[in-house]
Image (cartoon, rainbow over all chains, first blue to last red; front, side):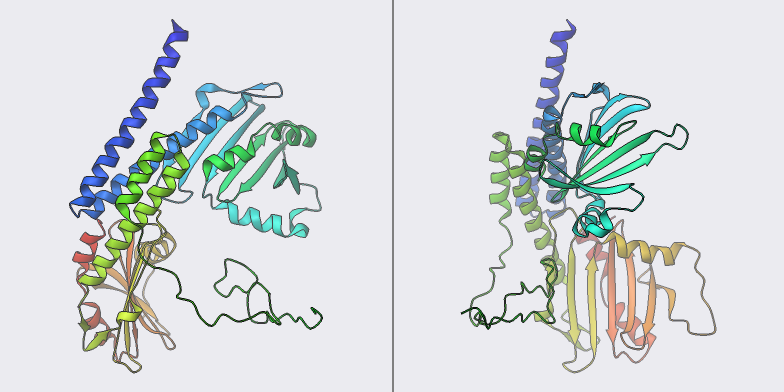
Length: 199
Length: 223
């Protein structure tokens, strides 16, 4: 019964998003045709949000469901679409594992962080810090910034990998991991497909 | 053959995002002396909505998003042009400079809409209006208005709080750039008036009060 319920729920959600898009499109068209530009713009913003939600759900489908020994937490899957504000647009989040041995992947469109990460990547002598807490690496051919963060209580290290893909930022965090572990697991994130879908 | 090639890049930037971008090709390369510029027709809103719909139906979501952004850009440019049309022909004797009229939009909600109009006497006196939605500017002005910043009576007081048509605003004066009045309106918009070679604060205020802020606010869809 449970197995049957899940596909029905997913289908119903997809249909409702489709209906929202169609509804907002009708509103945008009629408002524009009657010269009501502000209502047309508002309806289009809603459509952008609907589209970002649809794109986010497609991206979730291609993200790995397991990272090493960490399984993904389905309940934590999160997609947000927003047409306004800083970091506007798509936001996708998936978490893995539990507590101290957890990790997550975030995909953020138009993140304000992108400019500073690109600046780090453009200047190699800035990118590699002398204490080894930050370095520039390559993942699947993409340049990325790898940061090492040590937990002051446990003394164990965690890593954060930031990969800018034009206006999309992919952030991969892993607690209690080694550098080789995070760079190896990062290869299971389909960066090129994400770039294609999120642009 | 390439031995004489020199780098004539002095003064130009090699950053492609810089307005002064110069790719560094110099020397014997020809200079551009003709060309019709770019076509500045705003995007066709109806066509882009049709494109967005068909891309959406075939699950081409990012293509649909691109078309939708173009449609939004078209709508925003139309709104900007409507606002420009609603502005007066003259302000305290200064005539509008149609060539300086400008509407720019990023096609991302209101985050990048900017409308500009200048009024001049044909010599050195100018009254400029900029209507913008820009969170960075707005937070700076709102900080003045709500952050408890006081006003001094002595020294070099170069800004103070005022009201323009009932709206709280800031007036600033600078010897090199003249007067500037910033009026935040609604949730996220800002109107800036600039007065160059205005004789007094009173003259600047008279010019600022000519503009119908309520009408601009309504056209921007602000509350």
